[in-house]
Image (tube, rainbow, N blue to C red):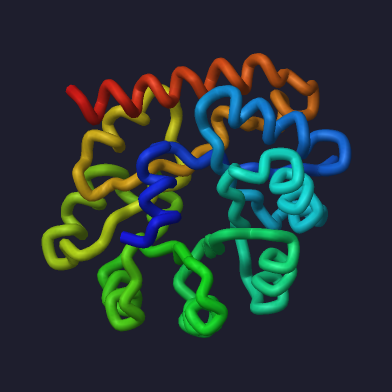
Length: 214
């Protein structure tokens, strides 16, 4: 597995972040995530300031792994990479975007939930796939079922993952890490509850550790 993907796997959780006020919130959020033991972030392009947030987070915590999520176009790929993004996440499987990212030699984690998606990803030689929306698409049971014909993939489920079911996901051997927004909700960020974010990250890390050692 790619070194960066291995580092993400070791952390076990990837906060999925939407920032409406990057100049105000990106720096303290990056510090809170790192303090909580989760030095990784997927900054979603659903917010207009995503590229700015990526740049600020990388400047604030240079060792942090920061990627771009909800990427829909090659222009957004370019914008994310120019800001310092280290990986790209897409909600669905877009062959054009996968090919473009491979040409740029940047990791892409496309959203895949069907055999057709998985087969397309196989043809591109991908290692890790995003399973989105995880809970709504069948959760751990479907991920396990899909791994039977496609054992070559590691999976990063996102969508509906929380402290309550994180252990269930992480215990599944094909799951490399879980994406989630429960530790970086709009309320927590808007009200600058950095201590609560630190606490949720620490709880997540503990759950991952216990699940893997259990």
